[in-house]
Length: 515
Image 1: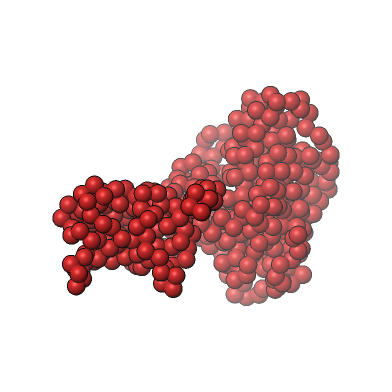
Image 2: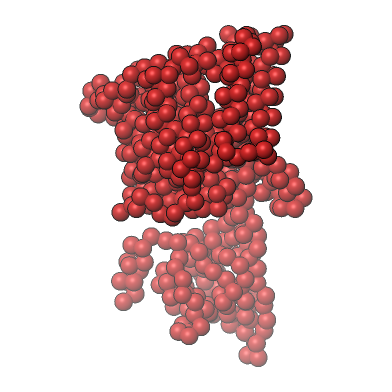
């Protein structure tokens, strides 16, 4: 059903390997931090980063995109872990994966197309601010802000890291600038014996290969009642964040990913990680951007990142723990700069105000809740309401009197639930002549509410003893009408053909009644 690679993506094995190594270094502190946020052992986050990363890289729908343990999932599962323990978390992650596989097989990934561009801009800008605020938190130790000499050292290391990342590509592209910055920064700190926090100060990352582990929970209705609500939320959050990240990578690389295949890939990955002691996750925007900007384009980059991360856990944990936190902050600060859509400031005054409000709202909700899925859902709802309100006010009609004294209304605009009030206000049955024609040639009847509005208008004309004629309605509209169905004038050559947003079963019932 799913081809391994949909479209050949220009890639280079050397770039994929080096960018994968860079991503692996950046994955460590993120996975540890998200595990601590969820209230689980750091290895649970690292195992998730490995299993999800390698599975999605092999069978996912977006080469070059990096997946692993994420903050969006960590926020959701914190309460579950606190109340029921980590075993229920593993069960929820497995169920989450099954739900995501279902989404992919039902081809529901295409619904990401419903996300308007203002929402996407708000998502990107809000994400940049969330990443930025996450780095600011690294300046606190035991709820105390770092100050004095340690703060100065951190700021200098961050600045040097950012300078290396920015300027090295101008000199050579043989080595990813991010990887070079991490290596140079770490060696410099060790040689100069600078007193600054390292990854090892956050948590130890040493461990064994992820063991296969069936969730130790009772398989009964009570367990399902506990786990399912978390699983469905995790699945939706993970898919929304993954598919939006897929769109972002599509834009950056000018290639096309496969949303439905990515849903299946994410689902299989989470099912596997739940069975190997992982906390669940989804696409990681920051790490995906690091990978793309480091030259990673193919599936090999994600596979290398996952394998190298496992290698760190098994053999090199003591060395990885030497990496200064400040170096990784510098890396993420450059991600923030590259992620934020600075051009969005130029849109003020050039695009409709509702679009600006939607974009700002999505960014603000993202920052305040740290929940990208919630922000996107809110943005889509706001955009839909804005569109409905705008479309509702645009329905209108021109009228004229023909040679026989009949009045002809030529309707323009979309007739749907939001425009019904404006539709009824157009007509005045008590003042109209005996014969009235409504021409729907320039209009479109969209839903059941519109059908009911036409029926109601016909009743209004009947009550005052006047004859109403309906012209250029689609055959399906005529079929669904009740009071007004005998008023429709059929013209096979001129009547439009389109469907009304209504239950097909009702169409069949109405068809049976008519025949």
